[in-house]
Image (cartoon, rainbow, N blue to C red; front, side, top):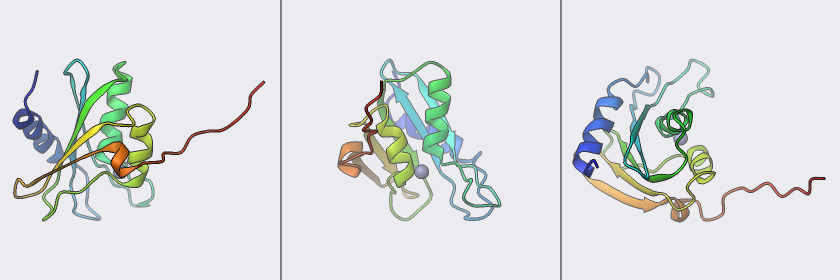
Length: 132
Ligand SMILES: [Zn+2]
């Protein structure tokens, strides 16, 4: 089982592989599964800007592709002056699988903030349909 320092180190390594020529804001994310596997993601920008993929969703997609759907925590790393939470789109996508996911975000100086996803997104979108 990886400790928080090891997970932050993995997020920093992954952040170095981010493709962020437009914003210059590189992000690394590690999503830890309930059994301790680590799935990493980095942001991948696109010239259209709207097609940019966030680190958090990259990590989630990799975890899902590996067959994992239950998560213990998300760790984010940037070089910003202040630790940032996931964007709104990522909050919605993460809430699909872990509505109360613990989130740790680390800034460029090692400062750390923690939230739970349900604090950041208290009312996620739900389909409300009657089928059949
Ligand atoms: Zn995002």
